[in-house]
Image 1 (tube, chains in turn orange, green):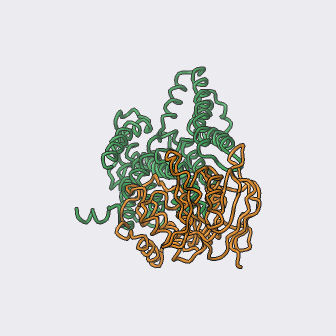
Image 2 (cartoon, one colour):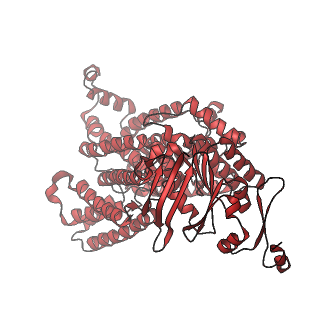
Image 3 (cartoon, chains in turn green, purple):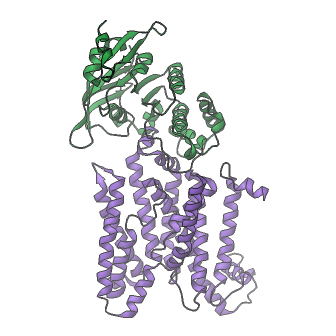
Length: 267
Length: 354
């Protein structure tokens, strides 16, 4: 198999304790790999170390066989597109200007934006159903609209590897499905942090489970998303079944407050 | 009105027309600004005196102005107005740079304490003659030393694990400002003479009154150099506004760019302050007006705010020498008195829009 990304022994700390410690991970060409885990388990930190917002304390990261950590920033931005959780822009930009920033890594020192760039930007906005908003002020958009603009920006970046940090965070369920369907259709390689386990089950080819900064489980959704694993990692009881319509795993949570459903966990 | 709307609209401004109009406005401001003052010289005469100085066509200009006019124009006002343009442009561009660096449009050129540092060493020189050995330009050089020392300290304090931490940068700027202000007070309180004290206070309030041709070279060279560096990096500046993380993901070497910006901004702030004292509010207002006019894209913001800043300072300086003529007001006081209320008005109006 053609491996795009290999992480080995990755550690990173914001202060005293390691936020991520000794994580190994790999992503193959065309795969959709999910990172799941409770809040603070290190999903975002791993992704930030990959899209070069942070520099690892320890460990090796290879992208297409090259050392990512010594690669020029511009070169890695041509290979890896990222959607982070930081999408507030405190200055006045138009939507199309924000999307056009996705073209930056393609630009040399004195290049101006060309008609080709404008076409790509328009196209990206159309993909997200936002072509009417091109001239709107980004500052005045709602959280969900901003999120879609940021996704349009990564589409305009035209990379074949996406790093997504809970990309559907602020979105309605219809947009959540639309975005993930869209990303799937692009046929690119994806590494995505996900907070919704059902979404992870629907879209991921493989899943890594993080807990306290360590990768504790890995495998296909059917292996990883069992009631026992979810209880031990998230501390939540649930029922897992294969849904007849999707053929994928569906997770039903069994809250403590509804004590009566407990006995059904074991069929 | 309709054509104006078409040129000056935020969504698709006509950059060519705006830049040419502002350059024309700058030239007109130059001619009028040189002419206006306690002794007025007609703009036509100003233009002819200036043309008379040009090497090739100079001899073809008829020579019927008084020697006094010529002395006023060439010796006093022209260097002063040119310095006003350069200082205004530098302050505006420094403001833009600082605002991109700290991702906040309320940052001004002196936010890292350069003005306090410059004031400390400049007053030391003015009141105690410590830097007298530096000769004619001892005031500017001493001011520059003060701002440079401050910025080096601020920079060293704000480095965390090899990269600039923006919060620490701001806080150490505030702390060093306070320390330097303390020094300045000690120096002024122990001042041996009252006249020196007056001069020092005047200088600290920001003034172009002592402008000489010799003051112009360094700020102009620094402005042009820094402007070139910033324009080359305009995409990086735009991306930095998205946040450090997004900028990194979009191919910007954030650490390197931040260092370049700190260097560029301190160089401009330091050289500007050395020749004119600290003229406040220009670095805050010029970028703000520019963004209202053309939006946030630095390719547009940098040149336009430079032109606006230059023109603004020239006119406020005209007011500074007219209001109490023949006495002078420090231009920095006027920019604050005019600029402050204007800025509050803008803030309030913007608040209403949302």
